Length: 331
Ligand SMILES: Nc1nc2c(ncn2[C@@H]2O[C@H](COP(=O)(O)OP(=O)(O)OP(=O)(O)O)[C@@H](O)[C@H]2O)c(=O)[nH]1
Image 1 (cartoon, rainbow, N blue to C red):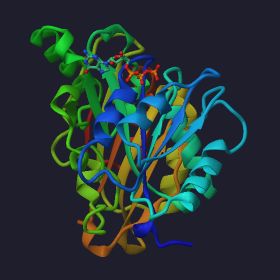
Image 2: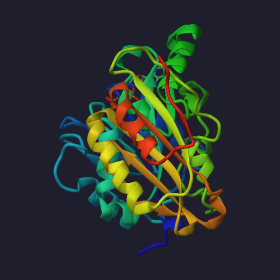
Image 3: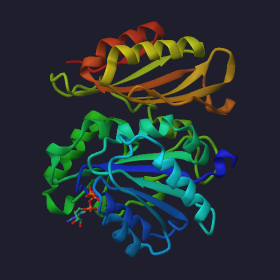
C-alpha cells in the first residue's frame, strides 16, 4: 500500500443544484499547479453534462462520471471503484482527486460514506470538504453543508449587491465559526482551497492546528432560538483515556442523533505523548490518526458543530470530560 503522504489528496465539492460546483472546478483546473488532478463527477440523473464542461476546460484531466443517483445513497462502492480505476489509468501518479457531488446530495452524507469506506481510505489521503454556496439563493444554504465543510466558496457574488454577499458570509460564519470563506469570483488559489487535511500536502508534515482551526477562533455564538439553528462548541480539557473518550463520544452521538453534524479534535492521550486527531461527520466516527509528539501541547481541544437540540448531549460530554473551559452559545 502506498504511504499515506504519497497518496492522492481526495477533496469533495458539495453544494445545491446549480450552485456553481462544476464552474468552480473548471476554473480551478485551468490554473497552474492543477496538473495531475482527477475529477469524479456524480450526476443525479442519467445524462451528465458536467464532465463535458470539465473536459473542455482541462482536456488533460482524468475524468470519471458516476451517473444515476447520489453516491451517498446508492449501495455499493462505486466511488471506490471509480477512484481505483482512475489511479490505475493515470499516465502519471495523481496528486489530487476532486469529487463533485450531485446537487441533491448532502455533503455530510458523502463524507460519512467516504469515512466508512476503508478500501477508498487506503488509496487516498483525505483533504478538503468544500461547500459551494450560491449568493443568489441564500435560502437554499444548507446547514449540513456549512457545518461539515473545511472551506466555503460563495459563488455568483457578481450577481448580488455587496451588502447581500456580506450578509451571507456573516450567516455562514455564525454557523461554522472556524471555516475560511472564499469568494468564487476571486478565483480561489488551489493552495488555499485545498490542503485542508491533517497532512500538509507540500511539506508532508502534520498540520494539526491549521486542520482544527480552533486556536482562539471559536467564540460564543448564538444563532437564533430556532431548534434547527446551528451551534458550535469548543471543549478544552486535559489528557484523556482514549477508550473512555470514544465511549463518551459515542454516547453523546447517540443522544444527539441527527442533530450532531460535525466533530473534530486533537486529543492529548493519557498513555502516549503523541496526540490523536479524531473526526466525525454525523454519526460516522473516522478512525483516529496518531500524530507526532510535536503536534501536542498536553491539551485536548474538541470542536463540535450541531443543531441547538444537541446542546444537552454536548454539554454532558463536556462535563464527563471535566472540561476546564467550554465555550457555549448563549441565548
Ligand atoms: N454569474 C455567475 N454565474 C455563475 C457563477 N458560478 C456558476 N455560474 C453559472 O451558474 C450555472 C450553474 O453552474 P454549475 O457550475 O453548472 O453549477 P453546479 O453546481 O455544478 O450544478 P449541478 O451540477 O447541476 O448541481 C451555470 O450557468 C454557470 O455558468 C458565478 O460565480 N457567477
